[in-house]
Image 1 (cartoon, one colour):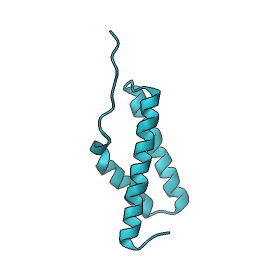
Image 2 (image 1 turned 120 degrees about the vertical axis):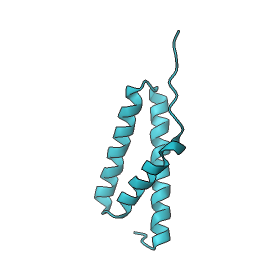
Image 3 (image 1 turned 180 degrees about the vertical axis):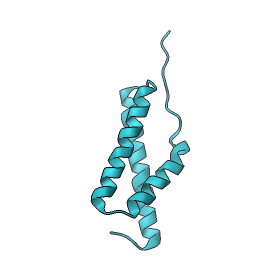
Length: 83
């Protein structure tokens, strides 16, 4: 019997998403983009280790990146710090 691993809902990652966005908001653009890439690499490694399919990994990474960028935009707009 073959089983399928389904990643837990992204909404459970909201704290991590908010921390990533906050760190990015305080940094220069080059560091911020590198930080996001590192977080995405860690997420993809973790999902692959747990047996999530590559299609699901790519989907989760895209959703995570989008959520971080939305949170970052909201932080920058609310603080008047749009770059």
